[in-house]
Image (cartoon, rainbow, N blue to C red; front, side):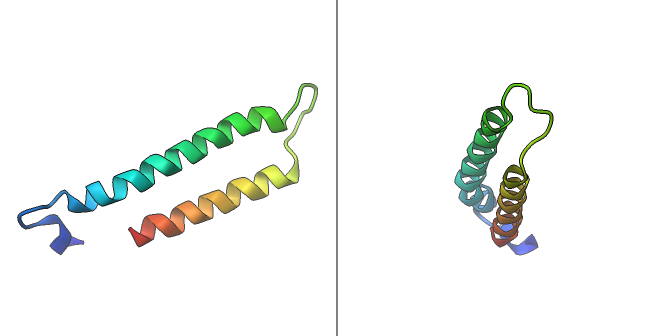
Amino acid sequence: MYLLCIGPRPLDVFLKAFPYRLFMGMVFMMCVWWANVVRGPGQESFPTHFYVTILLLYAVHQVLECAT
């Protein structure tokens, strides 16, 4: 990582990762909206598939974050 942060263009790493981070931010924003849809009025908890989806999205986020 050190070698990518020095030289004539040190912000290339940030610029290449920015579209991915913006996309994942929008995905997690949609998850917040979906949480309101999934948990209807009168329900006290979320269904299991909601938790599974959130965990899978978080795992994908972590894997791709390490790859960039």
